[in-house]
Length: 216
Image (cartoon, rainbow, N blue to C red; front, side, top):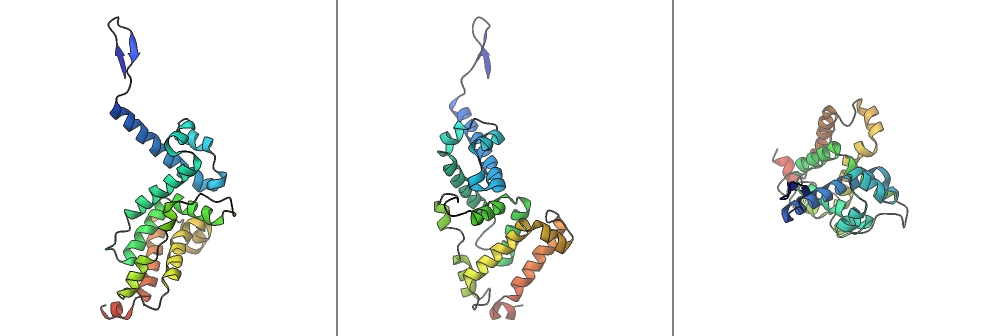
């Protein structure tokens, strides 16, 4: 903000504490979004701090200031994704509803799934840094509870099912060209999402436990 002193000369007013907080939050948000884009396009090893900063429109020194460098920024991207995931993974949802939300999120913004694919393909020693998020995701506890209460057939292995469902959600992002040829629709179109979601939910219904089938 520009103010004028008693002589009429213009001078820049130093930002107040609240303004500095807002500017810092905007900078962090811009860096997180730019980092997600760069990491999803090039993987952890291929992404460059300078490119992330340029995409965010800030100095690369601010990455060290806000995130303590590239590794800290990657961990922050992971934490932001988990926070975002919690918004559409409510405990009370059925598995079919939860899967539909995951799919919608993956198709609406494919970057987290692409980032996950890069992580899996990284060579030993060239992958991203470990973080506390790694201990929380993926987690089979929710699927175990669903099996125990008969929502799904109790004979299913939760780890196998977790991997299959993750692969199902990631497939249109990782194998977009194949999905396009199979369905004749681009994965980014709502018609593809509706058809694919309905197909996945049909498969889940076929995996229901006897108790759930009897209630239909």
